[in-house]
Image 1 (tube, rainbow over the protein chains, first blue to last red):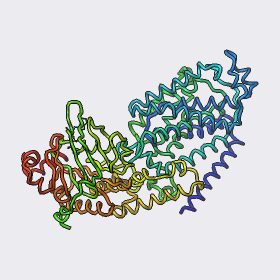
Image 2 (image 1 turned 90 degrees about the horizontal axis):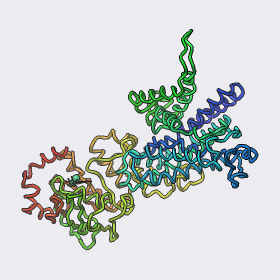
Image 3 (image 1 turned 135 degrees about the vertical axis):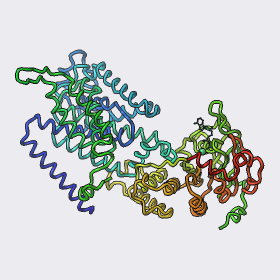
Image 4 (image 1 turned 120 degrees about the horizontal axis):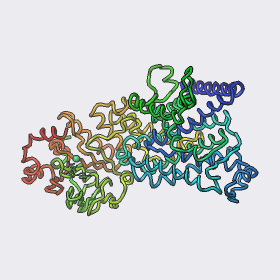
Length: 343
Length: 282
Ligand SMILES: Nc1ncnc2c1ncn2[C@@H]1O[C@H](COP(=O)(O)OP(=O)(O)O)[C@@H](O)[C@H]1O
Ligand SMILES: [Mg+2]
């Protein structure tokens, strides 16, 4: 059974690899971007799911941590020539000028930086308890954004950063996704995974069982922020320009959609959620463009996508609270039992 | 083993595992516990009784670190417990159950017990995520799983190990809560109304079960009950609380004969009226 499952997993990864190889040769840039975004959003969804779904902390700050990651990575891989040209409002901070690392190192540092910021924020915020968490994290994420706008010598302010080398290709984004999946599955299968769920489900019982719930929450939050930072960095290297406007609440909101649609606490759910939400977000772009019905022209309404999205989110909350997967997971055993429920 | 044989065991109050020293707890104007002192002898099964709202559960919450007493201290094995956070109290060797069962209802029976065992787990969380590098941590986790299964078997729950805990019948949920508490490897077990919601036969079985626990797991047990039959049958020593104050203490015989207890606890409604209390509690 175990061997069968390992073989099947290997085959599935090989099939994914084949698909990526085929896609990179045959699909246009627009399609490739969407496929890349699916992986990046899945990483981001997983990291938010760790915070919100697995550990039960309603956080609205993910865009802020993405921003930290995206900026750290971009600043580390843009060449000094580019930096000189880009900072036109104020000169760049001298120490930043010649800072340079490889892309992979910048990814890890992006994750670490976001994790550090998340850790700092979590200490006061997690003492507040559940009810204030959403508001407090939203506030901090906005503070991060405003800092980025104003720390011009470091961040180039509201102009943002352009010409980031496009390091994020299919291999990079899906490679990172597989790594994230691997560690996430192992985490949630370990006894510490049980402990995370215990803290989420009954804090008082968990404390009685000797679990330092504060420490566990801080840890889960910090880990989730690491994922947010890496995801943000991948995103920056895919789109090749970043600016503070990219990391507003709507960004967090899309991730929230992924997690809720897929199922809070389900790893499988976040993957499915990412596929659905990412493609829908792209597909729904048409409602923001002018539409012609014969002689009648409907003007495009900017932001209409988000309106439709909000309505969908409300519909999900009303009609299918648990999302696609609930807290269940895909497993090969479940696949062969068909209709059975894997946990 | 008859109840009276149990009670003949001499209790050594000089060797107290838990000592509550002059504890007072006020919630605003309400004095929930007032100048309470108790010494629980090592290895004993003792009871804390009293009418509803007497402050029994509050005493548990003070001992386990959920409430900080307004006055007084609690000592465990000669060390001060007061001021420790609940998880530190558990680490020190106290485990408890709740009046209203609090299981991790989304988790399986086995996972519930493994969560209990986590407090003694030495391997760090990240060691179990990285494959092949930390065989010690991986083995520890395997051992925790088999020890948890073993514990479940001893409490007759092993056949349901993979069932989600919320699907268990009521009596089994109570036993699982105790199993989870035992997984933390306590020296001292606090049971808050373990017989609540049980019929007379189930309560009788519970008595046997509690005695077995004490002997097999080398425990000291303090239990809260308002069902007098349960308490008299199993406890070697009893404290009676009424409106936060200690009104009597002694062996079951002494308590049964105490006019104060009869007045405060039994007198109002009579011995048989335990049933109406149960109804009020349901
Ligand atoms: N957190 C709290 N805040 C205010 N009052 C409380 C609190 N906990 C318990 N009490 C009060 O303390 C008294 C004793 O409660 P409790 O210890 O639960 O009684 P028992 O377990 O003996 O039935 C009750 O009057 C209860 O309302
Ligand atoms: Mg009570």
